[in-house]
Amino acid sequence: MRASRLIPGPRLLLVLLVLLPPVGVYAAAESALTFSLTFSGYGIAALAVFIIAYVLVISEEFLHLRKSKPVIVAAGIIWILVGLAFYQHGDVHTAADALRRDLREFAELMLFLLAAMTYINTMEERQVFNALRSWLVRRGFSLRGVYWITGLLAFLISPIADNLTTALLMAAVVMAVASENRAFITLASINIVVAANAGGAFSPFGDITTLMVWQKGVVRFEEFFDLFIPSLVNWLVPAMLMYLAVPAGLPHQNNETVHIKKGGLVVIGLFLFTITLTVTLHNTLHLPPVLGMMTGLGLLKFFGYYLKQHELNHRPPPDSVAGPNLTDLTAQDTVSKRPFDIFEQLARAEWDTLMFFYGVVMCVGGLGALGYLIHASEIMYTNLGPTTTNVLVGMMSSIVDNIPIMFAVLSMNPDMSHGQWLLVTLTAGVGGSLLSIGSAAGVALMGQTRGMYTFFGHLRWSWAVGLGYALSIWTHFLINSDLI
Image (cartoon, rainbow, N blue to C red; front, side, top):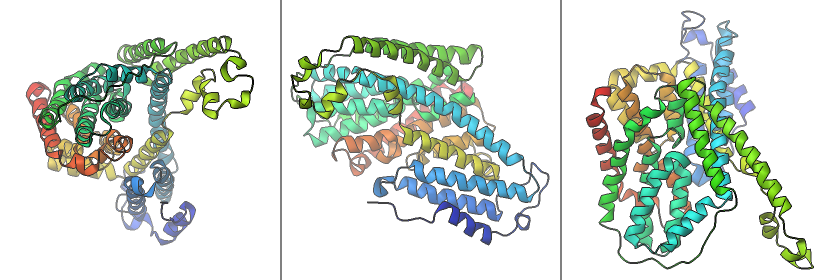
């Protein structure tokens, strides 16, 4: 399937320019910096463009249109509308300054994520994750044992390796031990998704939303661990309820052994050092976290150079690999025999996610420049109150991606207690577990399990996940009451 044809960006912009009445009809400028454009023709058009783009994002699974494409185009159109709106008020600087501020914020987050993704890709190339999967499969645990072990590891690994990578790794274990047991695959997959999202909620490295909160300076690194017990409750409650339905028995035996490639353990050590360096520089010198991550990426590149030289110097002669006729080598063999190249791991970063992140940051920033975030903050945090709003943020993230929601909340910067900031960090992180489409981990596992873990299979247990969601919030208010 292909996406339906859309009006090209320039033509759409031309139509909007013809139809839009002057901004002054809708809003009077109080000053060059404080006038609101929310109900102007430009503001309404920008909001409409964002809604259309996000409908396409939500429809990614059906249209097979990468989610980054519509939001990047929408970001360009929205900021052109912002520039035109301010220009009509005689202000030619504010829009540009606001755009540069959002670009700087995105650049810091993107480079941080790029460094982290390169580390994860390198560990994957060095067979670190495959070796862990192989070890787990060979231990001979029962199905119920595999259920608990994969859930626990998903909860413990996701704070470091991010929830998507962790979920994919644990799902590979589940599929390896019981690929034909649909009931077990469904329950184990739900357990993994919930555990990975919950584990990612109490660490800046576990999810993009927690990373945004940390980089914004709203929550310090060590303060994220105040969410450990609520996150644990969020996973354990549905895990125990679903455990009652997990089938008994032993999985298929698999004696496959995978060894970590040379340098794999060093890469793990470098990654842990990079995290430590990043946290230390941010907490002591108040330098942006991106500096520590990029420094660590530089160290990884140096080590990558060593690995490449080592593999070049220890390559077997061609005759010992493919015999006298080199044409016997398949394309896959040729790739596997290439020496390590750190830039290949850099290129394997999730560029669609990074570009989607760019589009979201720019779109939300543009709507903020038009005054929408101020109005949204007043409606949500003033009228509804922070607790109700923050709980709803988590529920919304089960349908709409949590990245734009959290970026919007951070851009609103509502006046609320530290405990409420922790609450919205928790709910935005774990709310996506309510539905299988609510998080990248859930969407990825629906594809990896070849249709055994489905939207409706997850939906049948949403009541248990929802109970865990509610009890995790209650636990947060109970143990962190002094912060509320």
